[in-house]
Image (cartoon, rainbow over all chains, first blue to last red; front, side, top):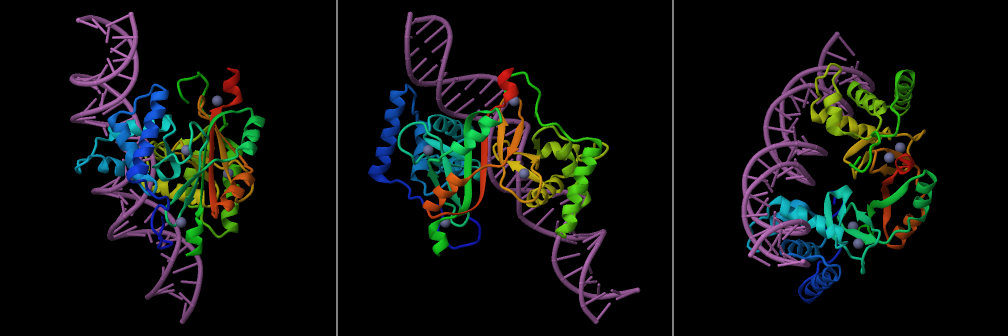
Length: 160
Length: 160
DNA sequence: TGGGTTATGTTATCTCATAACGGTCGATGT
DNA sequence: ACATCGACCGTTATGAGATAACATAACCCA
Ligand SMILES: [Zn+2]
Ligand SMILES: [Zn+2]
Ligand SMILES: [Zn+2]
Ligand SMILES: [Zn+2]
């Protein structure tokens, strides 16, 4: 969020109460199904991401980690983020050095983001990479992952 | 360049001699034409990028800056990189925290990269963002810039 | 209950990037 | 020529982001 406008940060609404509990439960289920362990620190970091209204910096998560204000040690949070990314529960946004919970239902998927420079919102969408994959193949590349981050202004900020 | 294979870093050949001089001269010309100044530190950082065989870390440039081994101060190089990016002479690769000289002739353009996880090469290409721009427009976003970085294996590393 | 594997806690350090401030250079107008 | 202004630079210091290394603890499966 630059100084360009007055809008609130992170247009995406954070989860609370039952919605939050339900989302965490769903993550728990997917971990059981894949024989992965949603341990306490991993669950806590996912909770912080789900509660948030927008992309969270790693050190914001570190600061907010403790239930009573005590911060976590950096490796605790970075390891949890690594796990959450690996399982598709969270994504890193490279151009922000920040993290968001996955907002796309279901398991593995290619992710891409529309990022508002005004309010800081990051909206995940499912991209069509047909053209880029064709270009990569033409160049002889075998693509494993694609990072796509579009910067601009969201509809709310354009209106305001 | 992970540990996956034995290939040399950065498949892109660095410029030397006349080719390097010519590229720097072309940059000089474009600066004159746009009333920008290719000052000594800016020229030096561009030279380092053009000479290199692959993406360069900022602190690699800082270390190599001096003609006789003396490093530059970080702001010197970061300011030069900011200028070079602004004029389209260089690009930052977000997922590597590294910088490359622009390999596309002509002025402003959208950039995208194919990055080999094996040898570290980063090949610039001109992407077709039609599909993603349509998706963004459908979501009400006004897109200003797009970062696209595809990770995978280049043809040389697949063959080896 | 032993042994391999995975995850955590902790300390320290590393990499990456920018704030702040004073001085220099070069263009512009008088 | 000289003042003035803005862009650029050098320098110091610090902030932000991420990981190495190693010891300990939990888990799982014979
Ligand atoms: Zn997702
Ligand atoms: Zn917005
Ligand atoms: Zn380019
Ligand atoms: Zn390669």
